[in-house]
Amino acid sequence: MGVSGGHLRHLVLVVALCVACQALPADRLTTWDPGIPGGIPRVTTLHATLDAARYGNGTTDATAAINAAIQAAGDAARANRPLVVYLPAGTYRITGSLDLNRNHVVLRGAGARLTRIRYDSAEQNFAVGMGLFWPDYAPPVDVVGSVPKGARSLTVADAAGIEPGDVLQIDQLDDPGYVKIGDWIYGKRGPREADANGPSSPEGYRSVGQQIAVASKQGNTLTLVGPTHIAFDQRFRPQVFHTATARADHSGRQWIGLEDLWLGGGRNNNIQVLNLAYGWIRGVECDGDPATGGGLDGDHINLFHAYRCEIRQCYVHHARTIVPGGGAYGIDIANQSSDNLVEDNIVRYLNKPILTVASGGGNVVAYNYVDDAFIATHESWQENAIDGCHGSFSHHDLFEGNDTPNIGSDSTHGNCGWQTFFRNHASGMNTAVPRSACIRAAGVDGYNREHTFAGNVLLRPGLRIGERPPVYLSTTTDTFDLAAVFRVGAASLGGEYHDLDDGTALRLLLAHGNFDYVTNSVVWDPRLADHDLPASLYLRARPAFFGAELWPYADPAREPKVGVLPARRRFEAMARR
Image 1: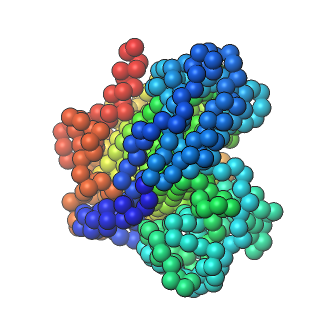
Image 2: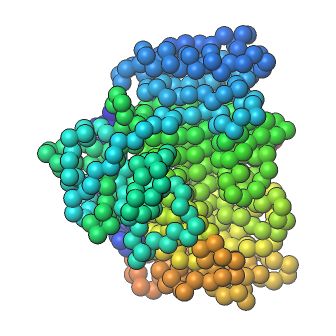
Image 3: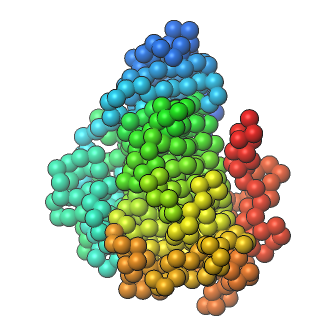
């Protein structure tokens, strides 16, 4: 269960994708090789089975019993013998957070319809924590010289406290040439006392960063498991510090899983991941509906300093109040989390179903059914369903093959750059909660940089706002009341929606090989002669979970242009029950 098994897979994948990606400029891409090397492990050894009659009756407080079983499993677990704490069918009432804070431990239920964990307290806590809360971080170590994008090694001033297998964060002071943080001083290191973001940075904010894993070291030179996704410039004093390092007396954890259960009631997120590498959440229903799940405040799932984690086959939905400001989010990739995989999930009926906040690059959000993004107090506004930025400075993430109303990045809390949207279907409007304002398939808000849209199917046929047809490109206030294929440059850095940027977002936008229902054609960028788009930017072959469904899911040159995602099939089957 170490990282070495994924290293060969990584090298093969890089070769395959270097050949396949010639249709798109290399400077806009990175190596997307996300998730756990070798996939989510199959853990079969049971350490403990809780007594469902005693603790799963919906009344008894099961918090202490579950946490004690996790700690005991952690004492017994080994890297080659991870252990399961099993919750049989029942409703497990908890009044405090469950602490999944031991390496190589899996908390597993009998299935999301059978095993239920219900957070039942007024205390503002998350229901389940995965990782280490709240650690003391080791001091940062300066990086020597600049580190180019794609680098697989770097030199630090002193590597004495760093070993192979450690997971670090690399970051740098903000480069004013491309970073605009607006009001977003959170989710990153800055000139505050040390907090959950890491050791303080008295010189200023560090919006740009990523998680890296150390494969080996020689002297003060570290060889990395994967590449850097963005360049780090010596002028802005890059540093590294430990995040998901799982050695004794360090700040992180590794190889922790949460599987096959229902979860609801969180008062400050349902699942909080912090400083975790190679973790996973699979087959979990996060129910924030007050009528059925006890409600939710915050994020359903928040990834914070997460490295190579996976979220799969989950159903994430509803909140106590569908409000902006972090009160009703779905899956949030935040705080320089890198190389994570969010694949084959259902996320809906929330303010922002999937979003990034100062993500660290290399993340892949793929083949998810994401729908019904809205604000309960705003009857007309179509919210961002898949939002590539809700806090500066997210970068170099891939959004592929999703079924959703819209794709793109806001700049409410600062800008982002180098985000790629590939072979998605963005219909323009919610399904169950239709809206009439800010209708668009793709949105790139003001000062967001180097956004790439390729191979997508945009809008749906016959979409109208009132009786008015949509436009292809909206960049002026005169067209904001119309539906659009692309809306670019608006809502700059927290201003009013009609506040436009200086043209940065449009100038750096690349749209290549997308089909839309305004021109009713595939539109290619005339600067790019290569029209041979690969089936995927991160997969080498058809994913097994697609079964008999059409793949690629979206193909502008095919009829039908979009298929049906397995995640949507599952949702439709649930709706019929």
